[in-house]
Image (spheres, helix red, strand yellow):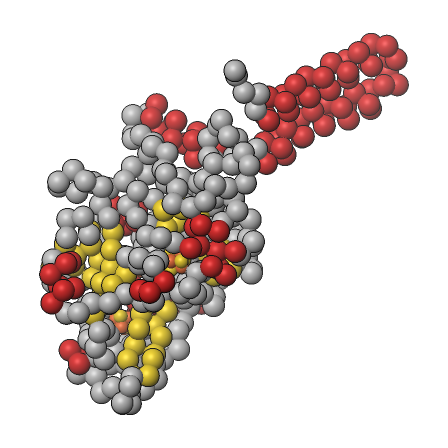
Length: 357
Ligand code: SF4
Ligand code: SF4
Ligand code: SF4
């Protein structure tokens, strides 16, 4: 049986309002004009308001503007829509479908969908002590994404070593394959895309922060204030894959730069590391690069006793680490401390003037 959706009900209400307005005008003459105007105004305003509330129609698109854009793209012959993405999480509130990826997933030479992963060689990370700067991976990510202060989507922790000294531990979102954050979101605003990346649909996030409580890596951040919106991003299509202009009251985090990867560009944190400590690549093709060296993921990890953070939790992170304390970059582990993080875009009044994602 055909399903009556909420927008249909709204349209019926509008029709009744308009009919009532005309009948009243005919029956009572000119004195009813203000009433007619008010009814017509309501008839126009109410559905516009309600339409956004019904953006998650069970039998409709996950996000109306995304669907219309996809439809437009198709008609222009510029590309197609990605198929609906299965969600790793639990069912969401009644009547709501989970958010889904907007772009076609990247496919490798073997024809398989790419599965992005990261490998951080801690032997090469000195927290940018040698540069005399804040960690460049953190700063580049902040600059490239206009990350609101005080968020650090990739945060470089300093942890004490047994026997003295310290090591640095760059920590982006671990891109868990069994992500607790996704499992608790009540509105399906966060999801795993086909390439294995956990994303957040800012249009759908209600800011309940349950995902933040669930993340064992403390990798989600709440937008307490109005985030920066660079003028040149105003005309950009909304995309779940970049969070520029995310509204106040939503949650943000490292998105693993899937749009850049698909375009053949390394994430900003990878390119910015002066010590080439961060590798990014495709687990499916078993290949990764730091921009200079190319390695086989599995062999490089096996040869160097890689580990994952909080492996015992069963979250299955896509971020792997090679242990060490900076020896490949000649760091003295007993020289502790790193420079504080900076938010370069804060110095510009209206945000970045080079935003291009
Ligand atoms: S990963 Fe690279 S850029 Fe980041 S703190 Fe370590 S050395 Fe610096
Ligand atoms: S690190 Fe946290 S935010 Fe990222 S996927 Fe895992 S649980 Fe989710
Ligand atoms: S992968 Fe992208 S979003 Fe994540 S820390 Fe690196 S630059 Fe930032």
